[in-house]
Length: 184
Image (cartoon, one colour):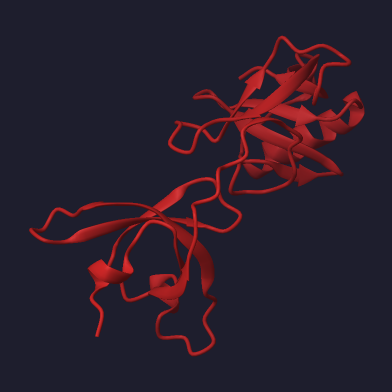
């Protein structure tokens, strides 16, 4: 019989089940990999850092969490993609889609950025965002939209935000996207 400490190794593939789903017979198991291990708060305990497939951040769980299933496969931990990228709708990374355009609220003040080259679409998205978040934007507020080019860049795994924006981009730059910014 092997112990948790013997199974919990960096590179071990696992499946994760949310606590709320543990009693559900056909619960969803999310595949992932152990990216790191560290001592827990209790003497002799172990904490596993788990990156679920398709995500850029880790879950931090006790290695003996009952919703964690250790699989047999152990591999190198894959590197995260870094550098410039073209955003896609994904709520895990803060990009949402309305009217066929992506948007994100960024920064502490929630500056609204809409990835489109069409001002009318940007205004529709801003109105929808405003209604959903009870912001009360009106047509006068929407006149503050600023068109620009931006390049989105992935940050390291433990960064404060999964991505940043280069506002100094220009048309023709690698991965440059036309956006409209609505300052907060």
